[in-house]
Length: 300
Image 1 (cartoon, rainbow, N blue to C red):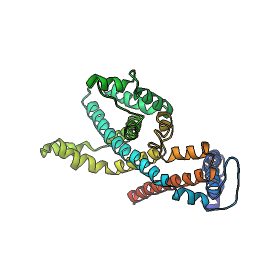
Image 2: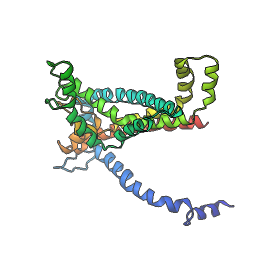
Image 3: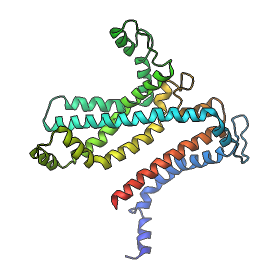
Image 4: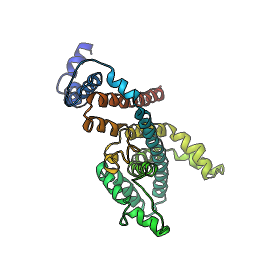
C-alpha cells in the first residue's frame, strides 16, 4: 500500500486521525492555548488593574530578586522530597503485604486494599478539610486527643507553628498519595516471576536477601517510574494544601503552586505570577523529559 493511500485512509472515519481529532481540539483549548498565554504574560508587568502587554523581563527580575523566592523553593523541596520517599516506601510495603496475603489467601486483604484506595479516591479539598479537623488544636481534635491521652500537659501546635505545619502537610499528602504508588507496585508484583523466589528459597536466602537482591532489583525500573510520576504530582499539589493550611502560618507551607495562587488572586500581579508558573512548568518539563528518556532507554 502506497504512502498516499495510508494517509488518505487515516483521515477516513475508520482511521486514527478522525477519532483523535476531538481530543486534539480539547487539548489545544484546555492545555496548549493557556500555556501560550501564560508564557506571553510572564514577559509583561500585567496586573488586574493594568493589563499591560508591553514586553519586559521585569517580572522575572522581581521574582528572582525576591528573597522569598529561595525560601519558597526550600519549602517546596521540604514538602516534595519526604512526601515522595514516604509514598514510595509505604506503597511498596503495602503492595508487598497485599500480594503476600493474597497468595496465602489471608482474610482482610480486600479490606486493606479498599481502605488504601479510599484515601486516594477522596478529592484533595475533602482530604485537606478532614486532616485540618484531625489536626485541630482544640480539645475536640482527634490527634490532639491522642496526644493529650499520652501526655495531658502537652500543647502541640500542629498548624500554627512553622515546622509542625509543614510536617502535617507531608503526613496528609502521604496518606492521600500512598495508594497511587501501591497500585503501580502491586501491578508489578503480579507480573513478578515467582520462580526467582523459589530458587532463592532453595538457596536458603532469607527474607532481607530476597528483598534487596531479587525484588527491588527486578522492580527497579518500575520504582523509578513511580518516583518520577509521584514527584510530578507532588510538585503540583494544590487542593489539599489550600484546604489544610492555605500556605500558613505566614508562608511556612507556601509551595510554588500556592505562591502562584497568592500572587495572582491576592496581589493581582499577573506578570510575576505567570513568571512563577513558568518556573513550575520548567520543573514539570524536566521531570517529563527524564521520564520519557528513561522509557526510551528501556525500550532500546
